[in-house]
Length: 142
Image 1 (tube, rainbow, N blue to C red):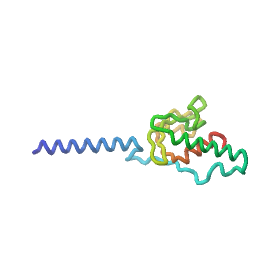
Image 2 (cartoon, one colour; image 1 turned 60 degrees about the horizontal axis):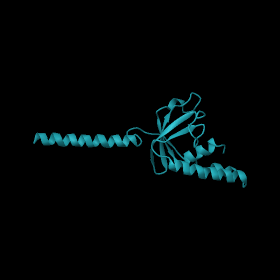
Image 3 (tube, one colour; image 1 turned 90 degrees about the vertical axis):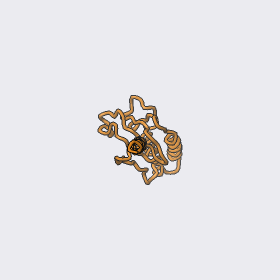
Image 4 (cartoon, rainbow, N blue to C red; image 1 turned 45 degrees about the vertical axis):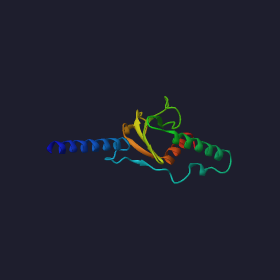
């Protein structure tokens, strides 16, 4: 009888440990992970009708495709060229840790001293889709 209760307790603890482990991987259940929300204003709205507005709208479309295709393990440039290959000009890289409906979890890696992410290495942040699209537009001159 005592052996059966010990086995049941061990199984219960193992299940809880497994559950909390997977939840931590998807956004640190026990920690509060900051969220970058989408801006309320569309960055392209500041341009009057014309070529600049059309170019911005096309860039927004490409950004939406890029952001929606991100998946766990992808490396992105978080500062200095979001949407481009994370090359030498990239001031801070990040890896996609997880994604959910309308959001992506990024883990900051290799920030340069001149990046705003410098003191955030190995920190995770949730970004709403619109926040990443806005970052893409800003890094592409809009």
